[in-house]
Image (cartoon, rainbow, N blue to C red; front, top):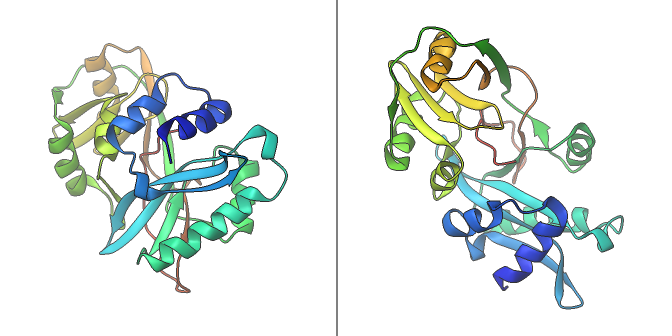
Length: 237
């Protein structure tokens, strides 16, 4: 499928402030897409990024979209069922997604997805600056494996490079940070240093996403079992 077809679909559904080109440059893989075609265009489609957790290969479903003119025709449900079949055939242990709102969370729950793990948004005021060291995507990926909580999903295979196009990556004494301007910043490790991090970034206050109990990502296994991941914190909304 031509990338222009994906750009048309995603631009119509989500707008494009440059994220589509960024995704194409980094994490997009043609083989990791599924689409339903109508009249020579993509009526509904999605992409996924390969992730892993405790030896299981998982798919992070991304940019799930139905073109405006094809909505309310059951295409999303058809697409998700097709995706489940393909992932099962390819040996994935399940799929992960992050609903944009509560209505979508309920819709995905009806398709077999369940909340897992959780996060907490921690808002803090700036304090005495701590030392931050900017790191490369490769360094960040290696450190993130160290700082992930038990059952944390490893997000690599282009995902960190995609993240780095819209965030600065930092390491510090006991923590790891993906600093973004307009969304909660994922902070792994010592959350007590949040105020000092904000001071170092020159911010008055800010919000961090840390492991917690609030509903965030959802998981659906490809086979019937009780296993589920423990944490997923990097989404690309």
